[in-house]
Image (tube, rainbow, N blue to C red):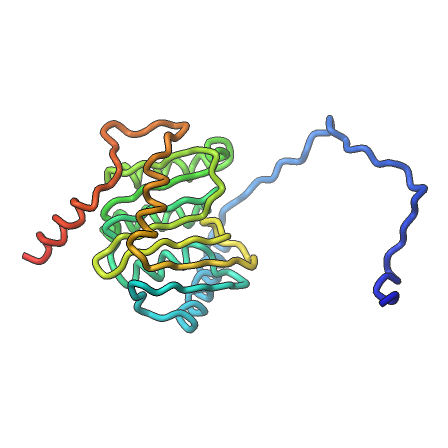
Length: 230
């Protein structure tokens, strides 16, 4: 057991190191290039293939799926997997931060009609650090009658209501691709999905609500289903 400590040296006489509080911190600049986009797409493709080989294709109501992953499987990978199985009558996304490419993909889902109603939530750093992401998410959500709310938020939650299943997706991962170990749970239960939706519906965001915004009502989904059946 003592051999484990051979590489550790303790010097109790070392002088105290005080933090340099007044020293300016270097600023990080992110540059998006075509090569970076290709790397992003390759990582995303690899993560999806890993999920497809491990997860069931059809989510079933009443089932709960637990996943712990390492690599480039991130929060949006699970949302994408669910959207491939059904169109979302309603989709709620909550994350502390969002990646630029991920936001563009979400906006494209709206454009393609894969999402009937979209509500998004971001952390309080959105305006300062992710202003472009906030603006694009806000535009996408407003197109569906939804909102992009900003508040002191660190939760990573997805809620999907659809014709084949309802689910709540809770994860340790933000909606931005990065290689970390993350855990995710998909709960296909109507009441659980509405539990999370009800919490976010009651949020009063720092940036206010769009004119006329109201929480999504299931009656709209039922009416849409009946119209589609005709």
